[in-house]
Image 1 (tube, helix red, strand yellow):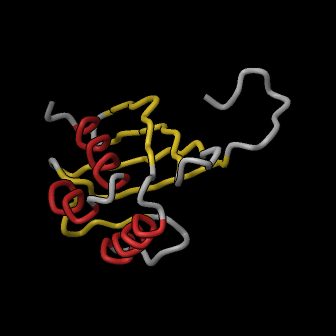
Image 2 (cartoon, helix red, strand yellow):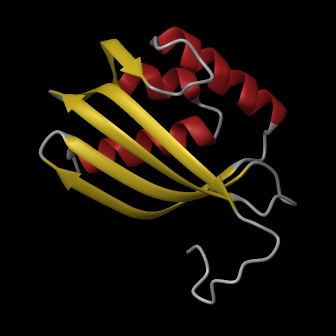
Length: 123
């Protein structure tokens, strides 16, 4: 364990399971910033948004499909279901670490469409 990749995956698993405070306490750097366009760029704003999402979606599921580490950068590709009837979304989180803490976070997502012409599927 102890790698940035393991830390990023554990952070996401904790957050998806509603344990957002624990995720932030264990893994987020004091000067953390993020790039989600729906929240201010500070840790507190994103944490509040994650907590609200956890209240609205207590049965959220995150399935990590790939995790890549390159120096202080980690990319995690996941399938996320907000609730059991949700088709889900493909989500990629990109983390930048400083020491053993997450200093910066980007995330992009794409909902799973009802129909797709791509025979390979999204996953």
